[in-house]
Length: 190
Ligand SMILES: Cc1cc2nc3c(=O)[nH]c(=O)nc-3n(C[C@H](O)[C@H](O)[C@H](O)COP(=O)(O)O)c2cc1C
Image 1 (cartoon, rainbow, N blue to C red):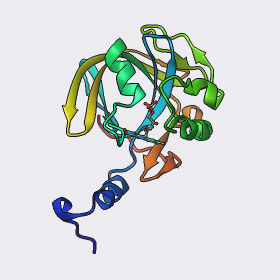
Image 2: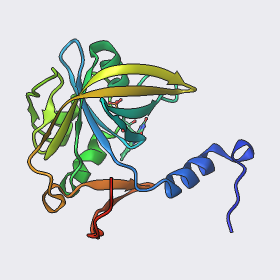
Image 3: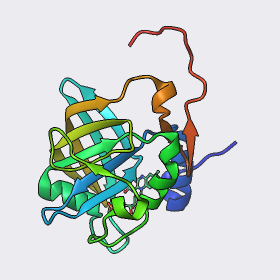
Image 4: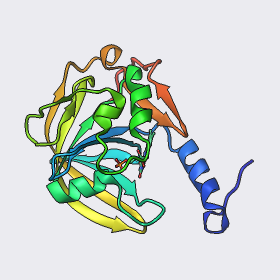
């Protein structure tokens, strides 16, 4: 049996236990553009949809070790826009590449060999190789300890289709990724 009093435990251990048991977590692969026109792309799994009328998502982005904001946060706060690109199985390696800590002048689309394509409702680019996209406008920003909570209003939803066999979405399972291989076909409400 495992028992952990979080306030007296090592923070790394709390993170490990929390992310091992809150599973699977969806992944927001967020593309933004700076006011200077530099594109940015990075994954975030402290992410979820929190309401649907209106459609609002939340992403929690930590500060860097030196207290600086991550480029994604900076761009969202400066431009008020972002795109969440769906992560499909075949894109996992690219997602990993874009999670590296690059300086703000580096365009992660170039690093990962991905194609930026024009979005419909926002200036931030979309990842062409993804199969579904949520284009968002910053709705609210809250600081929580050393995290920036970004609430996004989803302005438009685009998807090649809604078939999981095609979309092949993946989730975050502690430090790994999981596939949706077994889907319960019984109909439930909601
Ligand atoms: C699958 C995955 C999920 C991640 N989730 C988060 C997260 O929820 N919050 C966070 O601050 N960083 C998260 N990261 C780390 C960021 O992607 C990483 O710090 C990245 O360099 C940020 O890039 P940016 O400075 O261009 O915004 C995650 C990394 C991976 C691979």
